[in-house]
Length: 271
Image 1 (cartoon, one colour):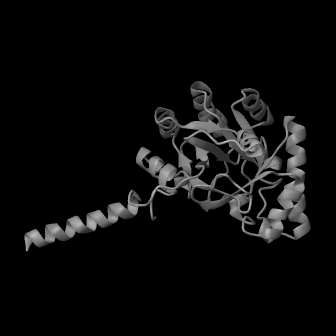
Image 2 (cartoon, rainbow, N blue to C red; image 1 turned 180 degrees about the horizontal axis):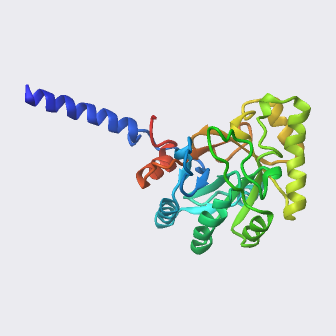
Image 3 (spheres, helix red, strand yellow; image 1 turned 60 degrees about the vertical axis):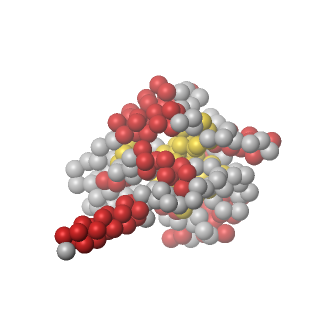
């Protein structure tokens, strides 16, 4: 009986491990787009702790990428490669950050600058230098966003480029079409004026609208060349624009094994 119990326990452990780490999935070709939300320690009362990657773990993950031969890209690198029909480096990866948080400047940017790694930040224009006021503070405490001076400093490094997250981090499927079109187009204009550079990339806040042909058409009409959804997976490359770029969302619990599985399988876990 004891042997049977041990055997059953071993089988259960193997099943759970195979659900937690998707090592058994086939390798997927394409462009991995890493998506980080907040770098730092979650505030007291946070209901979204998994969105916070510690500064120490972020450094470890970026160092792992470099140690394993990955080349980091900017939005402009993708556009140049697509325009000229060039191949990306064999191990190319696009690193993105959501929301332009102050902690991206204080915790992530120093690591990128020290290691010479490229990153891309999506920002909602009306919240620059304020906080993520689009959230319900009853569920998640507000967190400061980077100031325009911080964004300009990162821009001037040559390691950081920016994309739009609308004017007000709007849920595009929950507002009238004309308002959605304004949120998408006006944020591009305002960011270009404030930062003095062309904004060619757009992310749908919360992924809302990424599967809507009408809303995606608004992004193209506004002049964006790249759009990013919230679908989990490795993005197709060459990318024809028929679908938004899918991304690999990095969580607080993720280890280097998770990172490797994200980059090669398109997901690290079934839950």
